[in-house]
Image (tube, rainbow, N blue to C red):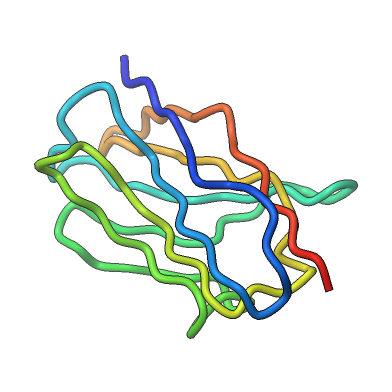
Length: 116
């Protein structure tokens, strides 16, 4: 069982930056892919960014060039650096840990509000 705790959300102005952190309760081995999702009010949850155990990354088109996902396996933590924030980035951001056999775990989310 993996427990995930997100932090770093809050209020930012358009064009500003925030850095989200996701602390895992156990070692983030290479068999785990870490992902960030978000859910805006009235919308479905969508994947924002992912990073494999080997460091490969993938991003939603809407955040490419603005967001950067990273992980520090020594600290059991994944990060999402969000730059040039836009009002449409306003959402609850969730951390997700996916094991190679398909088992996954979710954090409880951290809220991001971007004002125009």
